Amino acid sequence: MKETKWTDAEKKAARRAFEAAFRKECDFISTKLKEMISNALEPADLWRIHDYLSDRREEIDGKYDYRYLVLIAVFGRLLREGWLSDADLKGLSEDKIERIKHIGSL
Amino acid sequence: MKETKWTDAEKKAARRAFEAAFRKECDFISTKLKEMISNALEPADLWRIHDYLSDRREEIDGKYDYRYLVLIAVFGRLLREGWLSDADLKGLSEDKIERIKHIGSL
Image 1 (cartoon, helix red, strand yellow):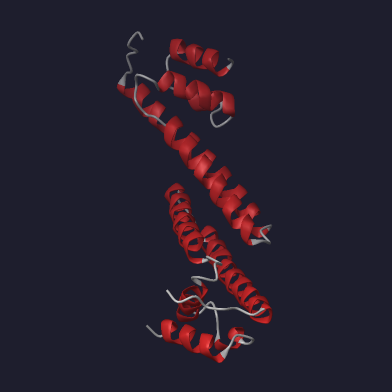
Image 2 (image 1 turned 180 degrees about the vertical axis):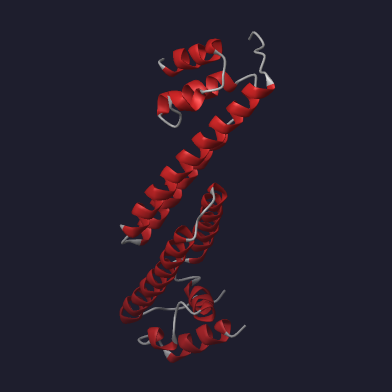
């Protein structure tokens, strides 16, 4: 993989975008969790909630990888999944945005 | 371990007590979960909730063992932890109740 250069300003923008996506996804999980718990009637519902959280945790642990080597691909996935919008990419070079959008469209 | 005989009536009473304790503990977890989620502010709070549920699930999976061979000990523990009350033991022989209470007091 060709090394991508990140300027200090881009690193700052990238960190902001990364954290915004992370918070957005965690807020979504939190809302979903509230909904699940308010609908929980049976003991088995508790374990369904636990399974849901286990899956989300594993997914998030794997997905939010802030290494510059993989960040373009990470952002592409976050864009595709809707945790990032085009506006969140502001501050990155045109070239990077293009590559992120390309991955996001796959 | 000396084998304990259970009459059909006792088995029915035991099953009722077992299920009542299970439901009571699950209701407690459910209430605690609602409290935790309503106080959750940070993404890390989600993983604290997940940890809590993982611990409870493991504990409950190990604890609620409805084999007649171990049921006296299981009931003793449930009594000690407050998931069973003396009234829930109604229908069991005096001998069994005594042994359950003894284990419950350990």
